[in-house]
Every structure is written in C-alpha cells, then in structure tokens.
Amino acid sequence: MKIEFQKYSANGNDFIIINSIDRDLFLSKEICASMCERHHGIGADGVMILRSSDKAEFLLEIFNSDGSRVNMCSNGLRSCFHFFDKTFDKLESYQCELAGNIYKGVVSANRSSLFLNSSNTDFSITKELEFCKEYLSHAFINTGVPHLCLETENLKSIDVNKVGKIMRKNSYFKNGANINFFQISDDFIYIRTYERGIESETRSCGSGILACAIFLKQRTKSEVFNFRSPGGDSTVAFSDQGYEYAGIVNHVFSGRYSHS
Image (cartoon, rainbow, N blue to C red):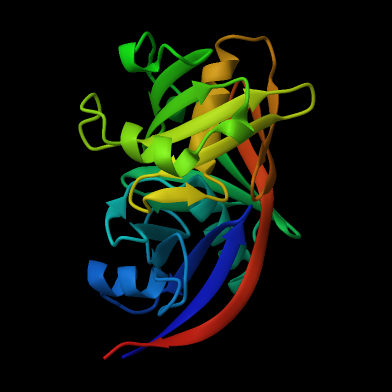
C-alpha cells in the first residue's frame, strides 16, 4: 500500500498530513507509529488524517507518534488549516470537526491561526498540588489534552525529558499528562514541553502553550501573551469571543509512504 502524504511543521511541531476526504483510508495505530519513526519512517510527532464532514470543511483524526489517538492538537490543527488552504478553494476562514467540537482557522501566507470561542475556553484549573510545590506556581488544565503547567526561575537548567517522564506518570493523572515548564521574562514566556504519546520533549506544543496562557490570564490583566518555544514564537490573544492562537506553519515536503 502506498500512502500519499504531506509533511508539515508548526513552530517545529511536525506532522504527517494525509488527505482522505474523497476516500475511506484506514490506518492502524501500528502504521501511524511506523510512519512517525524518525530513523526508519518519515519522522513526525503525529499523523493527521483529513476526512469528509457534514458539519465543517473537514473532519480530523489525530494519532500521536506512538499510535495512540488524541482529541486535540493545536499545532496540528493549524497545520491542517494551512494544508486545506493550499489544496482546496481558498476561503476567508475554515472549520474543522474534531472529537465532537468545531474549530475555526484562518490562514495568511505562512501563518495560521486557531480560534476558539468562549464556549471552548471554560477550562477548569486545579492548583495546590502537593507534588508541585517546589515550583513558583503551577496548575493542571485540560485543553482537550491534560496539561500540567509549572513556572520556574531557570528553564534552561531543567532536564525536561528526565523530569517530564517522571511527572507525566504521577498517580494524580488518570491517563498521564503533558508537562509544561515555563519562565516569564519581559519579552516572552519561554516554554518547553514533555508530551505523552511522544514520550519526549517536542519543539513546540500548541495545547500546552494555550494551557499556560489560560493559567496566566487568571493572574494578570494581559490580553496577549507572547511565547517562545524551542521551535519558534507564537501568540495567544484573548477577547470577549474567546482566543486566537497564531504562529508559523511550513510545508516541508510531499511524498509517498510504502507499507506492505
């Protein structure tokens, strides 16, 4: 079986995008995992499969690099909006159906924005976790993916893979969690994330950036938060309608993947 794909990167968070809108393509979790393998496969943080939808421009299925399914990936959504914009008729905005929710996207050149209305932003925030007291502040937020946000004074000193691997398996989390470490400076909020399902630090994590922005929004009067992750810069802007998450998206290459 030969699978046509597009390789995309959103602030260093890279994805394999497969257009299955006009056909019914089934991929097992084993195939998705093999495609994401960086030494013997294409290499990616996840697989995005676009399917037809009666409610939006497309329906999206997301698989992590270990083959597990996930209900939200902000950078993946931004990448898919960019792909759709370059592949089909251009629209002022696009809608995607994902895990029972509808998400809006806008594309401009090499930037892509994800919009969530106020009904999508009423996230519960849990604080005062005993195992997080060594950090300046912390919060647990589920933005479609469970995230632990940890504020630190010295982000560079943290071994994200070592600490993240331990914390993501804490018994407090029913199904594990992504672990975000962030440091506030005058110009940016610096952030690094350990992602479950990838089991490693990634160059960027959109839903983690959103989680930290939501946490910080409760503490300040700011409406705009500028983040810098290892993969690049992105912005979260709040309004009465909800919020916008924006950043760079790049099409890396196209290809065909052979699987017997």
